[in-house]
Image (cartoon, rainbow, N blue to C red; front, side):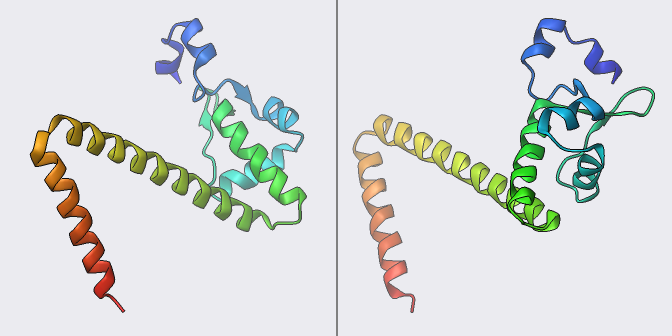
Length: 136
């Protein structure tokens, strides 16, 4: 963690990815046990950083993920299934974010593209619609 310790303290306080919490403190914050956090690591859901002494350190982002896993497990979901659900939710969130960025980019392009942008948008819609109409 030497590179992170070079980061100014004020920046670390606002950094969701800074590994600020020891395993014991992290478990306490989410109302679980260190064993539960280890099992999330073994399942590949979260990968804690290691201190110079080899101790696991967790970020706020990782604790939010672990807390979500804890909720699912508390509802009776097996830990492996909870990890898969969270992984799929994260992938969906990322895909939606990228989709929104692409739409915003396309909207900016269409606004700046005069009549070419307008005809491109309508031909895109027409070709997209006809190809989906032909599929059975």
